[in-house]
Length: 410
Ligand SMILES: [Zn+2]
Ligand SMILES: [Zn+2]
Image (cartoon, rainbow, N blue to C red):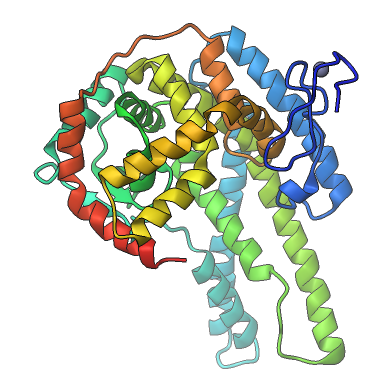
């Protein structure tokens, strides 16, 4: 296939509809088979994809050429906070009304709706969140070299040091805050960690710690509550089997269906409003990662994320064969080398596949392009081979436990 605009040969990857690698003709093609349905109607998903494409491209241009700083107050923040407060009031109202109905002229038939309302309030009560069960926490005595690296990256980027550092088996990493005291947690996926070279690891830490300072709207306690409460409401109202038959069943189904669409609508609205800010925060975290590790390593880190599936496959294979540590790194290096030539196409394809109004992250390929477009930064924190090896030895125990989990899971 030849590009009708610039006559370059079209390219493809992963069986996607071809596009032009040069002028990106047809890259914005909507391919429902490659994405999860979002609103549930194909025409609507196609339309929102088009809108998202324009917003994503516009934001990229603005940020690539302008200042990339954290954002203070914004309309998105105001709207999201308002929804959060309203939701909390609604839950309080359920609790109050439920209690009143139960106690009102007790015992009466009003006890039934009362119990139902109170039950709903309990199910929707705000929660502070805790550590995921599969996280292996590493304290400073157990992993001094890793903690030293975290300290150095934090100092260089101006981010606060996390209270906990943990490992899990994912091919990713995240930061979060847990508990009423809002303790900062940094969790590194052992699989991703092992697939990275030294500076890429620094870039990963820089990016993740950057989330503590990038003004990410989703990190505020109220917004966290709003998003999880809405998610739980949608879950509760999803139509299922009521156990009743015939007409009643139909009626319950219709009411549930309407209610769940309504809640889904509000949920999507809040997510949609917040996600532009979130994507901006993600670009900023990448920039902070580049400040720590150097721009080149930060770009390579993103390219690794594009190869997620292949890396997961080879590392799972190694885990099943009873190998971890160095074997993971070797397997990852082989997979990365074999995919290196496909990176430009994978970066472009990520724009088609990951562009969404509801995506918390900009397309991975655009993040890499952003780092390449912005002023190049030298490495601020250097992880030597010896230090990296010491870290590997420190985490060998937990990694072995993670290997066993991986070998038995799925
Ligand atoms: Zn072209
Ligand atoms: Zn991030």
